[in-house]
Every structure is written in C-alpha cells, then in structure tokens.
Image (cartoon, rainbow, N blue to C red; front, side):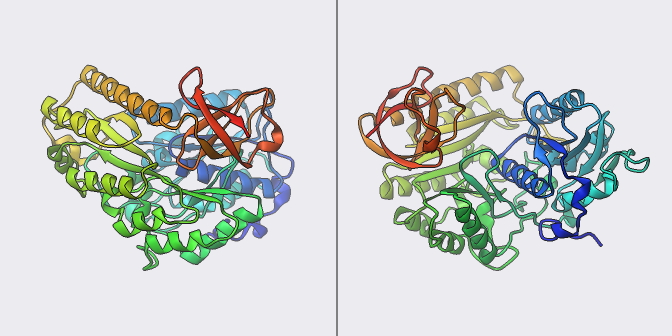
Length: 459
C-alpha cells in the first residue's frame, strides 16, 4: 500500500537525499506553481537543496501543463533542456502532460520517472523507491517507469500551501473539474472535482502565518466547486479563512461566473482580508459559442456579475479569460465577443488562441478558424486589454495606496501590488531588502517605461 508522503515523510530514509541538489521547472498555472513549491519544500526537509546558478542538479522535477499544443511543445522542450543541462540527474516528470501522455513522456531520453495526477501525491515515496537506497540509479531504478490512473480512478488530493521563492503563498483548495467543456482536456488530466476540509485549509493558512506569510492566493482547477468531497461550501471556506489572524490579504485565483454567487460578492465587499480582485473566465462573449463550448452560463449572467462587483467594489480589478478562434466562432460571433467585452467594466484580458486537443468534443464542430485569423483576433483583443488596463492604472495616479512588496535581486527595482492588484515599481535606488514582504503606504506615480507598473514613492 502506498502512503501519502505529504503526511508521512518520516517513513523515508532521508540519508538517500541528504546533500543532493534539485532543479525545479514549472509550466502552466498558479496551481502547478503551488504544487511544485510544495514538492521542493518536502525535498528540502529531507536534506535536498535547490541548485544554484551554474551548478548541476542530482534531481530534476518538471511539473507540466497541457492546456494547448503549444504547452505540450514547451513541456518537451523543458524536459530536453534540463536533461541536457544536468547529465546523470534523476529526472521526474509530473503534471497534466504527464497524465495525458505518460508513455510518450517516459520515452524521452533521460526521463526516469513519470507520475500522473493521482501518483504525484506520493512523489517522495515513488522517487525514493525508484532512485534506490544509495541515492543513485540502481539497475532496477535505471529503467523508465510511468505510473498513472485513468481519469475515473483519480481520487487523491495532494495538499499544497507554499511560496517557493516568492513572497505570496499559494494555497491549493480544490483539484479536478466536472464541467467537461468541449474544448478542454483538464478533467482528463486532473480528474473529477475534489477538495480537503475547511478545517485542514485553515490549519495550512495558520502555518503560512507562522512562517511570516501575509498574503495567500487560493488556487485550484475549479475552486468555486469546492465542497464536492466534504459537503461544505466555498463561501464557508472564504468566511473561515477571513477569520485567520495574521493573514493580511487573500486573493481568489479564478472563479467560474456561474459559481461566483451574489453571497460571495457581498461578503468580499465587506471582508477584512479578501481583496477587491477577481479573475473570471468568460471564454466567449457570444451565446452561440458559449453553447458550443458547453459553458454553464450566458453572457447576460456574466455581465450581471461584473455589474454587481463594480456596484459594491468600484475599485475592483477584474481579469477575464478569453479564448479566440475556437471551432464554431464565425466572424460574426467574434465581433459579438469584441463588442461585449468593450462595453464591460473589466481591467485586463488573458487572451489565448484555441488549440485542438485530441479526444475533445469540439472536434465534432464543423466550422474551423484558420491560424492567421486566430492571430488577428488575438491582436485585437490584446490591444483592447491594453487600453482597459492603462486607463485603469492611470485613474489611480497621485493616490495613496498600501503595497505588499516582493523580493527583488540586489540592485534591481522592487515590485509589488496594491489591494486592487495594481502592479507598482519602486526604483532600485530606493529599494531595500528589508522591504520584502512588508506592507507599506506609497504614492502612486506615472507609468514606468514599459507601461507594466506605476512608479511609486515612499511616504
């Protein structure tokens, strides 16, 4: 029987790992980053240290994404690069691409171990067994092995609350998805929706506070679906986390519009620690396309949610995911999307082109958008996004704001975010290491040179 090593690390012979060096590479979402940083923390507790620049690693861990064909290609590139840069290292690949294409990944030269969505919860145990007692490749461990389950059999939940080398903590509150949108492979890669208890998540948040954490980002695949495993509700989780003393800020990484309840919006508007910052996937502003995608809402519901947020939190930053060029998106449908988003009071768009994924229902839709048209549509939406973001930033120039600063390399400008997610930049001449992870009041100035942040001065 396999034991979850998130709980039973003490059963591992740490001498196998002590003094070894590890390189980590993460592709994809904040959830992947959260998981990778937790894996790194676990290995560090066993004596493994992160590899320094110019050093070769003994262990390489690649946490993959598979949301598009481009993501798959980047995963293969990353694996090849780490194998080449770290000859002789023990290479472990996990994440969505590893779950969807385990045999293909296992055949890549240099890969020793492939772990699917269910198996990564026991990463330390698999690694320990495959690597062998001496911490080197034994004859048996030298064979490539892939461990994975079918989607219906993915049951485990791998807890994660870590910051890695960042300032903010990322707390994984949910995994998997039951929606099966026609374009998406994530339910096949992550399994069905599941979650831990509210009590366990509150405990992890308290541990983050004990380590000095001030801001926590809630991550997951479909976090508004929280409660499938425990009979609890997402709003109850939010209320419980808001009561944790010491956490100054929470952010919700992404929330489906049909799961963004009025009760949740109302609570966030009066919350002690949940910031006026939302990220809501729209995907399309055409009801025709939304139906083809099997999304769970129409554009009127989406507009109503945006309107309620802005009514209660006029300063809220609202990010929106938009997919362009999916099957069935005629020029008329795209124009509907463009005009709909133009009229929305949102701050920023995350625009990505549709990528055909094997096994998805979208492949049965006849109308296909060519690549050149996808790029043209993407450019239009990205230009619209820039206009909205710049207008939002400029409306706050001259105001005072509280910023949580993040660590920066010595001699470089420091960056941070306001409560409503405006990115700020403190010039290198004024930056100090002791400002990292500190909440400080600043005056917001003009846009920086590349228009990605507002320059600030300390009071």
